[in-house]
Length: 163
Image (cartoon, rainbow, N blue to C red; front, side):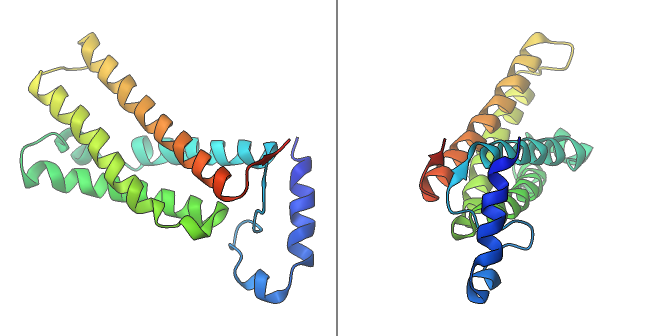
């Protein structure tokens, strides 16, 4: 299943010491995506989403992101910052040159979550209302599509995919 990683690991072992210094601590420099690295990247973004949106998001963040003014923006920005850190980690591992996509993720995640939180709050949708769950699902799918976009950017930057 991860046969493509063997060749990448061999590239890592045979690269110069200068190249090795620039490599991530967790993963050898990827020169082109394989199906196995694509799968690993996808799984990493899924884990990041679950960790940042469910495990690391506190009740204060989840319940207050839709509040007006600073009372809403503060928990929103803390939450989006956690996502940005997760995205930074993944980009440093898979494509360090594009580390700044963590800033893009901060903005996009903030916009998606603020829109959903304000709409849910203004419409007074609660978990007992089906519209709440539609908005929740659309919010999660917007994040999934954002991650797909990041994966495509990483793939393009690394020269495509080797089939």
